[in-house]
Length: 453
Ligand SMILES: Nc1ncnc2c1ncn2[C@@H]1O[C@H](COP(=O)(O)OP(=O)(O)OP(=O)(O)O)[C@@H](O)[C@H]1O
Ligand SMILES: CC(=O)N[C@H]1[C@@H]2OC[C@@H](O2)[C@@H](O)[C@@H]1O[C@H](C)C(=O)O
Image (cartoon, rainbow, N blue to C red; front, side, top):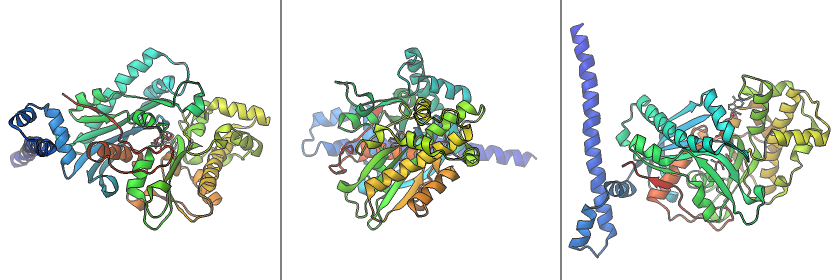
């Protein structure tokens, strides 16, 4: 018995000692790398004064320079999408950048949000009028909560906090307003994600990148879809035309033509993914947050008149690329289509079956009109790939079996979180990749940097 306790004690003592030693060596190594990196940056103009300045440099900046020049980086990517269902955290190890990016997903976890928290998010999301006080409070709370969840995840994985170089946090989109949606002159494209990065950095002690979408807009994009950058770097192939189709709250896809020519890469939001089905079920089936395995939709019948009215919106006639959100695709949109088609008394299960058909048809139409007749493979990701009715409809409509990103080495549920980690890797260690001259895909690095100390 005594020996057994001695073993337990020795095990935990050694484990703790390992982390402490690792931490101190790792930090020293990072600072040294930073020092060398900065020194190299001075090129031929190294003087006594410049060396003195480097010594006086903010530790966090030299650490960042070290991270930038290191051969590998460990980055935690965080994503919470328009479904408001939870926070995805993907811990990734990167080496290289741009088309030479190498990535290993070390761990992945989803923390589902509690009902009360979902209700708070819903109260300020995708609406023209909300409580400004609630927005302000949630901006700080989401930052703090994200930090707590990262620390919890690292503890669960037994992964030392100090061995994480960066956090990449998408934040929570509470309003997306491309010009095509708001149409107010002189206002530009706009979008708002909350969950402040400073709170994450200070509470975890890890340098944090956040608020990725603003620079994309400043550089001429609509702030979305950003998946195209990672899709191109990680998944483009020399010999296969690929579509990376993500079906989250909103569906979007990236087209990657064989040959990796950035000038022909194409990316757009399509329209609703799960968002209208989710909103409808939450309203009519208390206690359900989504139609699990399409259990309800499968019992309904598609109403063609309603589907035609749902498809009858200027958004679907707009040229690609385009972006959207639940600001457009919501219950009011459904009610208007029901009225227009005279289907106001339709049974709930028939409405759900029709909403599923609407999602499938809008995806198929977008792919067909933008890609034409050339052969291509589709790789799915996002929660919608778990909806069997939706996947059956897509398979029937496209005429071939769809794969998911597991076939390309990435867990499809982790993909979006991984892609934000990749954007942070690009910002800190890359930045010179040419993403081509296509509209909506500016060649730009993204993410604001928050220092912990
Ligand atoms: N087993 C399942 N059956 C049916 N639908 C499912 C299933 N599992 C997940 N979903 C759908 O996937 C949704 C969550 O998807 P996901 O987490 O990809 O969305 P998101 O990241 O919030 O969206 P976005 O990327 O558009 O912002 C759920 O709300 C639900 O509608
Ligand atoms: C503004 C915003 O948060 N848009 C999301 C949303 O969810 C899916 C689709 O609409 C996409 O455009 C985007 O997210 C993914 C991660 C993107 O930027 O690629």
